[in-house]
Image (cartoon, rainbow, N blue to C red):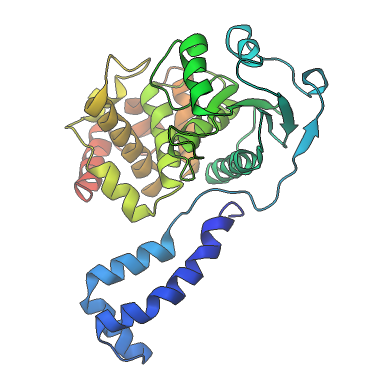
Length: 329
């Protein structure tokens, strides 16, 4: 995919610098056949090398259009929420306030927006391609991204506008709010929260109606976590978060989070992401769009097991998932 430039450029260099040390540790001659044999005997180094080669990497669009707009009134889409959007575009949070537009997003910022703009378009491109390029229901109407310039102002915004104290970023309908700096004063280069919430923003463009929490958060955590992890790392980390969730328990979390916090909420995110991984790894990816569309219209995973995924029964899907899940505990 186009969206992998930054990481893909580093992988060959990483391998070049690491290869002499790998050969030394394997105590293998440089003859290809002998090298392969030695690597097969040393599964740990083979796993590391495989992870480097197969790493999904961060999502950055190789090329994208970014155009500066002089005033809010000149933007292609000036529809923002009065309680959050309009309350945010003030001198309390931006001094000076600037705007740029990309193909799918309008970014409100104070300092350079290029990193977030590139990542936003990259994530959009990756999700659309992964899902088989479904229709973007918003068409040419662009989503808004509000980049609060520093952590101090972000904390003020979180309390005054969002009414929350602990958030690291939040997507609300067609709007995404995010701090340009974390508490250390640096841009979050790994972008875990950014990737997760940006997935919600793109998701909302494709699926404008309510999607159950377990599926909505599962998709966001799946894409958000995998942006900076290899498949091996993703499954190992998410797999360790299990807290004995059954599919029935998981899919009952339909609206809100049922009061979950801390480790329980973390395990919910992990299990929901693993279910999305199972559904897209063991089955055609495009079926995920059918599942999401079905749930928007009141459908359930129990019904989808037969009608979408072709199982004889929901119990058969449950058993398949249990087998898949045991691999990554």
